[in-house]
Image (cartoon, rainbow, N blue to C red; front, side, top):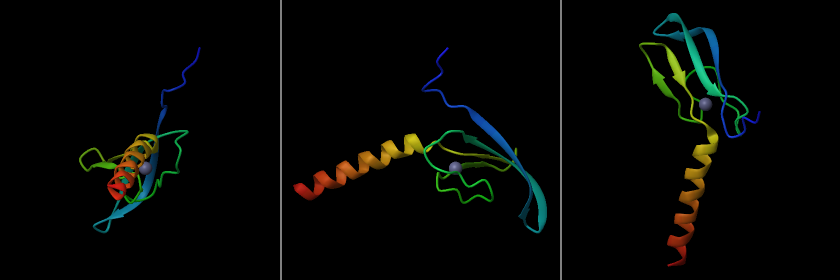
Length: 83
Ligand SMILES: [Zn+2]
């Protein structure tokens, strides 16, 4: 059975994140087999993850979707240059 086009999402549990001098456990939810590498420490992943402070979840965005937006922006910029 083919599952292409579907993302598997994985949860990575990180202990030892330091915030306000307290050690907290955060869960990163990120797409596996994504085009780019997600930073699973801290909050500074370049996919601009959504951070849920209450549940201590860091929800990453798929780079594929982001790439589409970046590509669209590039095309818009290129078109703006031409006119
Ligand atoms: Zn990420």
